[in-house]
Amino acid sequence: TEATIIDVRERYRTLSMYRILVTEEEMQILESFTPKWEALFLSTKHRDVGLTIIKEHFTDITTSQISDFGVKLNIFAEKFALGGPGSAGSDLDTGLKLLKSFRDELHKLELEKQDLTNAERLFNLPISSYTALVQVQKEMRGLEELYKLYEDQKKSRLDWAETLWRDLDIQLLSDGIENYIKMLKKQPKDVRAMPVARTLENNLKSFKESLPLINDLKHD
Image 1: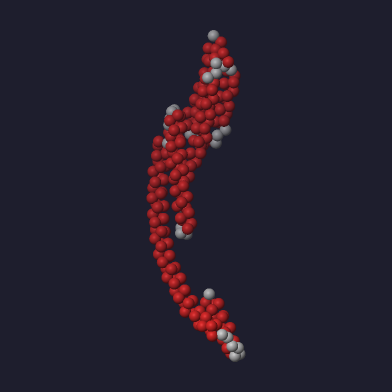
Image 2: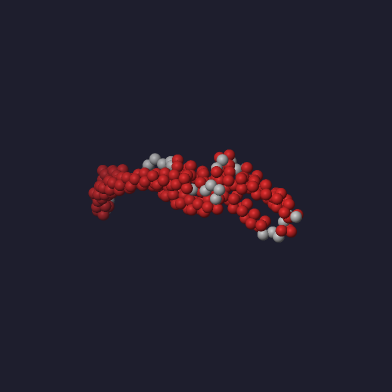
């Protein structure tokens, strides 16, 4: 550094005052320090100015990308609300397909958001918060739980349907479907309030109510 160069020069000046001899090679090296340092200092300054210009350019690009991402996210959130897996009505099989499709799209948006957050940190920009994304993520987590429950009970009912009529245990069916109803009731209040939850609950209760008729038919 410049302070180090000044210190070295001062030491050699002291040696000269006390008439202590130094080699010519040492003196040549000493004399070359200052111009080399000045050249390096100017080069660093020029490079810093260049990097500042580049940083400002990429900061502008990042700011624009964040704005575009916000628009894209709002469009996705509206599409999710109007035509997503939570709006399938009584057709939960269609809702299940929509869930997988929207899950993939949401994952891509989450990755894009992470890239933008990293860029914000790199360029010392304020970290953006996306309310629409947080809301969709929250709803998606609830729908994931509901559709998993739907898939599980559907598989159980298919297994029961493959049981021979004479081997059919009505109590086993009743206990099984009651367990799914209890699992549904254990979901958080906001999840139970979703239309998918109400459809699933009606589906489960309807099946349970049909069991006495199935039992009567079995014993006819």
